[in-house]
Length: 82
Image (tube, rainbow, N blue to C red; front, side, top):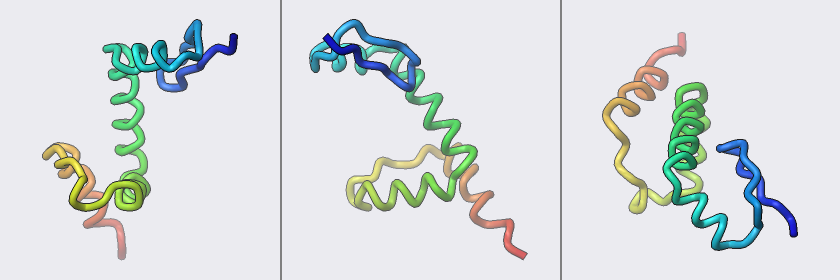
């Protein structure tokens, strides 16, 4: 039986079944690892993250952007060109 590897948690699951993966994905440690990964990605590459969000999520379905993250990305978008 093949194992499933979670890149966010750096963890091998004992089984590759859908039930086991869903149970893992609903866990607190996985959600924290996922949030940390994407927070780091958004902070290091905000323009790329925004481009990906525009491509993959329609404007009507997009979740509201937290105020702290919005402030960080506006600072990057607004300045930098001479």
